[in-house]
Amino acid sequence: MSEPSLDSLLKSWKFDPLAVNVRKGTGTDDREVLLMRVDLGILQMETSGRPDGEKPAGRETYYAYLQELAEEDGKNFVLNEQQCQEADREFVQYYHRRVCWLSLQQFHRAIQDAEHTLQFMDFCKTYSPDDEWTFAHEQYRPFVLFHHTQAKALASFDQFEDEEFAAQSAIRWLDAGLKRLEEVFQELEIEEQFEEDELVLRLRGQRDSIRKQYGVGQTLFEKLSVAIEAEDFESAARIRDELAKFEVNELDS
Image (tube, rainbow, N blue to C red; front, side, top):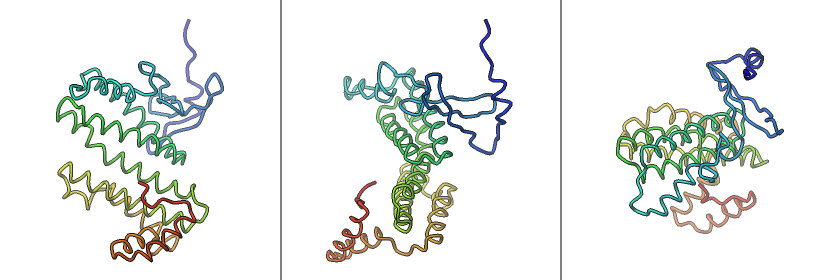
């Protein structure tokens, strides 16, 4: 007995190679799922937990499972070939879902998936079998940080009703992301590429655009940093009071 095909859906939803082709759908049990149109078909992803809906060894993610193994083995733990392959599977799944969330402007969910990937990358770097495998993953860290920074900045406009302060918050996250990116470029020993890197230029362009659109000069976060550096604690306290009105911890990152 043959399985039903996706002919009708594929014909009605043409693949656009220049865009992220994503829709929300409904599973057989009425749960919400993500549908991503790719060149030769459609990917279906869960909206919570691991994107494929699996629970490796009963854990929420393969990363969580590996963490337990590492805790049991201690310093002797090193990823084997099969574990490396399974880790790569999870990286790819979270990448697909992350770009879907960004396309749908679900920025808080994009942040969560980016943070899962960054934490998993840290883990893999610590327990990598060799330098070659480490570099194969670390070279993508700037791209994940780029997505994380974009999502953090844009989520500010969902978080704060005051548009001017939302813009200030967005600029704060863009500055923090650019700083983290510069540190990664230094760690990868490619710091000479930083100033002309496309991801860096795009984040700076986004920051400049927000400053212009919302008429933002020096942000409260920047004023606070200047006051602390100058040991002007009275001004710093006043600025912290202003930030408190928006329920913001200026040290969040």
